[in-house]
Amino acid sequence: MTSACTWSNVSEGYRRSFATLCAGPVPTLLDHVAPAMERRSAVLLDVGSGTGTVARAAAGRSWLVIALDPEADMASMTRDALNASAEAARVVRAALPNLPVTSAGVDAVVANFVVNHVADPRAALAEAARVLRPGGRLAVTIWTRAGAGWADLVGAAFEAADATSPPSAQLPEHLDFERSPEGLADITRAAGLSVVVKDRTTWRWRVSPDDLWAGISSGVAAAGARYLAQTPDVRRAVQEHFVRLAATEAHDGLLNFASEATLVVATKPSAPLTST
Image (cartoon, rainbow, N blue to C red; front, side):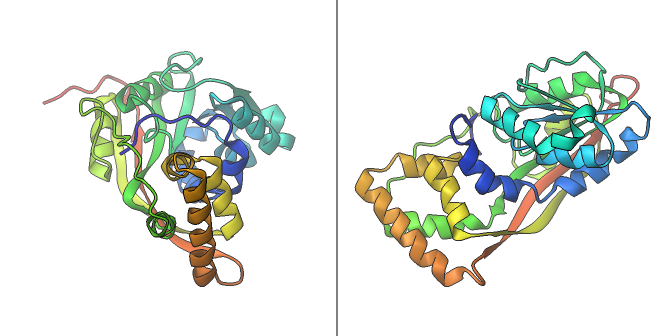
């Protein structure tokens, strides 16, 4: 359970590593919002666009796309990813919970591994609900405790190097939520949306040891922050152990990790939901 994090100055390391991991659920997310994208002028909002994986895939379905990311490097990568689809897409620097979008202004919202990084998940979902038109769809993924198959390998390298543990990055209790399908569904309902799917989605992540290490050494996410917090000697030891461990697990030059995420899909009702 992590607090808000910063992605500035790590974009290239992220692109090489965890961006490819986070791409796993994208086809599933887009399939779930597709019913809301049947109108000719329907618009999908990709919040936290990162390297542009969701935006590019949505544009590839001939959908109109608005992609938002607060980091200049990430927004630039999204523009590059869209490339030939530029006429059907717009990239804006912005972040939850302050979206430069009119109320009921979009038909679908996708937040792929975003809600688990914001400072106030409930406020983020409330803002996503605000910009959805009635009948629109929201699709959200977050990491589960078992979701990071790669973490065992990286964690073993830290342990072998006697690396110090980072301070807790857990959100304050009043802002946090249970990282499970039901927990994410609960705070989605609290935003005034009707949950239609609450589930786990799984896939395999194939990545080269060099690309995974690029993410860690750049400081991406909690593992990267832990690495950068070590002394130079410990960093060298972590890298040496990582290289050794990765060599034993890689096949044909690639690591292959089981990955799992929580998936929630919701619709915006025509009238506000009322409790019974």
